[in-house]
Length: 389
Image (cartoon, rainbow, N blue to C red; front, side, top):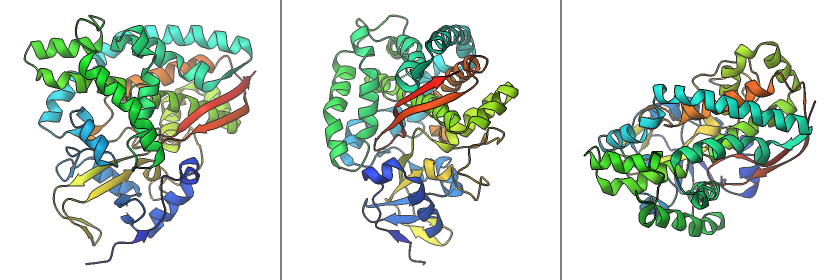
C-alpha cells in the first residue's frame, strides 16, 4: 500500500483563503489524494477524483455531515445537504418542487423585467458596487420573497447564509465567531418559522403543506426551511459579482461576449469554473477506497475541493485563463450527482438576466476598488466598485 502524500499547509489561513490557487496547484501535484495534517483530513484537489466522489454517494456519504467540525455537523444533521438516499431523495423531491423547470419558466419574465429595470438605473448612475448594488438585488428582491419569510427575517438571510458557510470550517476563530448567528437561524427555523408566520404561498410554507399531505415527516420541515435560507442567496451573489470583476479585469472577454451574446451560457460556466462560489464540502467514507493505489480507510473524512478541481489543467487547458469561448459545462461548482445544487437553474436564470441586461448598455467596466470576503467555505467579494461606460 502506497504512503499517502502529506501537506502541512492550512487551507484556512487568511493568506490561503485570499488566494488559494497556488496551494491548490501544490496539492494537485502531490497526488490524487493528499493528507492535510494541519486540518486533519484527506483532500481531493484533482478534477477526476472530485467528480467521481461527487457522483458516488454510496461510498462518499453525506449522512454524517459535510462540514469540517462535529458541532455544525450535529446542528445541521437534518438538512438535505447532510443526508443520503432514500431520505435525501424524499426531501429533495419536496424541496425542489418550486424549482422544477415548468415553475422556473414562469419566473423568467419577472426576473428579466426586474433585471432590465435595475440595470438601467445603475448604468445611468455611471458607477456602482457590483456586490451590494447589482448582485444582491435580484436574489433579495425575488428569491427571498419567494421563500416567504417576513420582512425582518428576509433581511437576515444574507448574514445567516454567510455565517452558516463560515461555521463549516475547522474550529478556528472564524468558525467560532459564526456560531451565534448560526444558532439564531436554527432557533428561528425550529421555533418561529411556522405555517401561521410564513407567507402562505411561499416555498417555506409549502414544506409544511407537503408534510400535511404525508409527503415527508413534519419534523423535517424546519431543517428544509434552512435549506432555502442558508445557501440560496450568497452563492448566487458571489457568482454575479465575480462575473463583473472578471470582465473588468479582462475587457477583451467582455468585447467577445458583446459581439456574440450566444456565448452567455458558456461565460456563466466559465465564471463558475474560475471562481467557484462554494470551494469545498466533505464526505465520510463508508468503506475502504482505493485512489490510484492510495487506500483510504472506511470512516475517513475527505474534502472535495471544487475550487481546485475546476482549475485542474488535466481537464482544462490553460486553467487560470478566463475565456468565454471555453465551454466548461462539466465544471463542478454546483456539485454533481445526488447532491448537485438544487437551485442551480434559478442561479443561472438570475446571472443570465443580469448579463443580458448589461451587454447592450455597457461597453466597458472600469474596476475602481474591490475587497474579498474571507469565508471558510465560500469565495466571493465583499465589495466591487466599478465605473461603466
